[in-house]
Length: 281
Image (cartoon, rainbow, N blue to C red; front, side, top):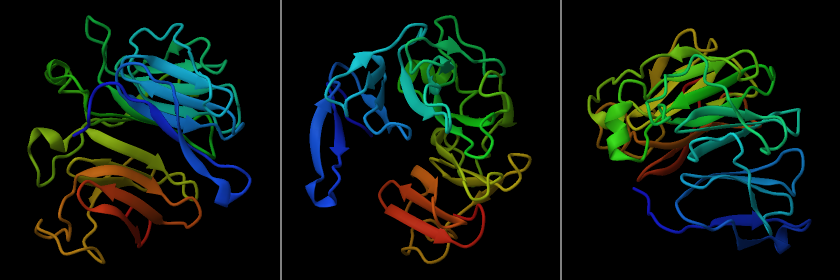
């Protein structure tokens, strides 16, 4: 689904004038895939990037220069980066080794895997594909396990992919909020791994996540879950009863400004949205 090889990150560098905005290739370069890029909410000159084989990259000058910050990282695969909403120095990353935290912008990392699946002998866990910090309660974080790249690893962690976890102590320990994504009407291998997860800022108890077989949501902070399909106001579909050509979610985000609106990017369909109540994509 994705290309391999030497990749760089293309960052949009916006100036004070929107008309002057441009896109430039700014690095960091190196081997492997760049899995995630995050611009700091606290300082626009700071950029973070995660690589599947190179670890964690940091830039303090809008991406003109990069440095690798992997002390304590262990396994170098980084698939997701989250920044503390209030503390500009605290970060969380997720990947093959589980979840790691830093209090100094990535200069040093420590594992925070209490409650997560036990690592295999080579240090790999079920890969954490998404971490989200609760904007209203900064002690609370959400994380999801998904699909690793490596075919050998897929079989090794098959029983732990497709889980959602919650932390109430700043990410130091975790509890399963959903131990197994229900297959629903799809029963193949691709239906379980979580692809994307997010929390509503307007309604912090509303959690939504997407898999390769659809959308799931909770309206009570993970106590109960339901599968949601975008069945109305969407292009005519090939999947009976859903209105979609595909239920393979690429990304999912609650709208920052409009309560109850959820934006979903589907493979082969594009970017869609629904505005019909909490958790109903």
